[in-house]
Image 1 (cartoon, rainbow, N blue to C red):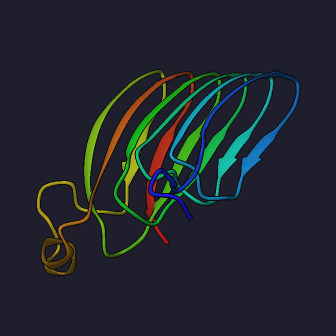
Image 2: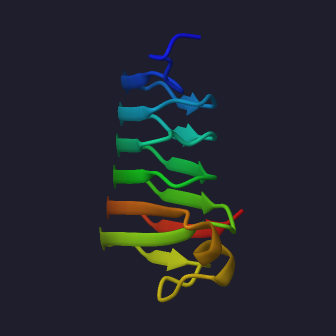
Length: 133
């Protein structure tokens, strides 16, 4: 391996009526989708930005990373590993924001690891659910 080796590439995807699933290690991911569902099962090492119109977003988050998730007429569900602290900035127009995870304090386990995931979400006619894995 050379000294310039990186964990994974930067990926930009645009689709209409085609579902997307990312299940490999990447550095940065940017996705725009119309009438398509998006699933991220291995989170990127640095950032993930997903925008959908009439499509749901599912993110499985196992390590610290910055997420920007936006949906119009679609639901967003973030599944977060128990050893992560979560910082959420969210808003919704005619949708619900729900969390199984306390957003007021770090758990002792996540405070020990120093792992933090930042999630910025925005929905219009869609719900956001933050759940434990």
